[in-house]
Amino acid sequence: MRSSSLLILLSICLGLAACTRGASIDTALQITKPSMETTASVVRPDVGIPQAPVPEQAGEQSVAGHISEAGMTAIAEPDRVSAPALEQVALITPPKPALRPKPAARNSAPAARGQVYRSRFSDAKPINFGKVTPQHHAVHGVDVSRWQGDIDWEKLRERGANFAYIKATDGGDHLDPMFRKNWEAANRAGIKRGAYHFFYWCRKASQQADWFIRNVPKVKGALPPVIDVEWNHLSNCKRRPSRADVIEKMEVFMDRLERHYGQRPIIYTAPDFYADNLKGAFPNHPFWLRAVAQHPSKVYPGREWVFWQYSGSGLSQGVNGRIDLNVFRGDESAWWRWVGKTSG
Image 1 (cartoon, rainbow, N blue to C red):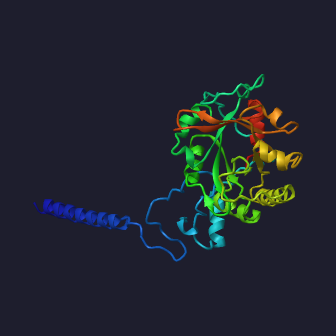
Image 2: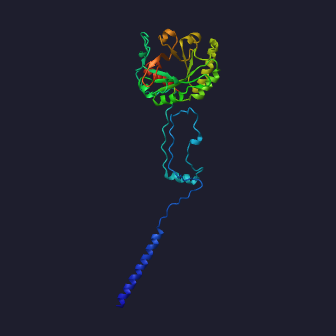
Image 3: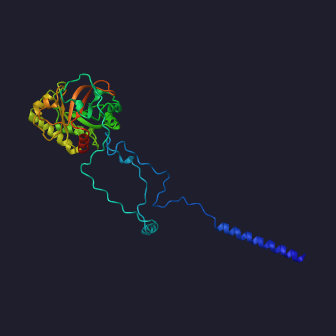
């Protein structure tokens, strides 16, 4: 009995010792939660990674002005990293593979080609132009202003508007109230767009150029700006300057636009104004000619042209009322080459 009691007592003592050792090991292996403290050089973000804002149009400035720096968001980063820290990172981070050098950009890369829509316009006053008609040209387009009201640009393109010139300004203080809306909507519809200015003969050319630049954004992919020069019997400016004054004013205006946009402006004109002032002038500028009764070769003999306005009484789905119709001189390949060469 005595020996059995001793054995029992010894077993109890060994069990207690084992329990004590186990508790010590568990205590030593306990893992503490990570600290939420921050250092002075690294800021712990309290939100998810911010998404970069997507611009409405790449490379495009807002018509209203530039985006303010206050609207941009940045993630705080340490100002300085110690040399030992960099060495430790180098030990565990494999070096990045060498990047292949990018090919040199071409000076006149061709524009990305899209679909050219066949013209399905009609005309309230159709004209027989003879052997060469507007329908012989592959690329049709329109020019618009406030007088066309609200335009369904998607539908207008489906009907054949591959390009659109949009009235922006005239004189030195008038902005077409529909310009901004038309400018943005035409672009969303995938139509090549450009802006034009109606020249006012009772205002300084430099003031008119500054007014146009102030209101028409410099946008990559836009068509060259247009100066619209004609005699307007509805204008309150009845002045008709001499040919020399006309050419001088046009040069001032176009030179300023060319310096700003990097594109040579196109001259739009009508038969009477051309006969009075522009015959033989500006041989190095592209022309956009109004000829709604005869082919331009008969109205402007010897003058090369890029656009021909062949109707002021066009009809199309997407527009209430009449609209000006135009063609580009050349086939589809010539159109895309010209766009690639001249677009901003």
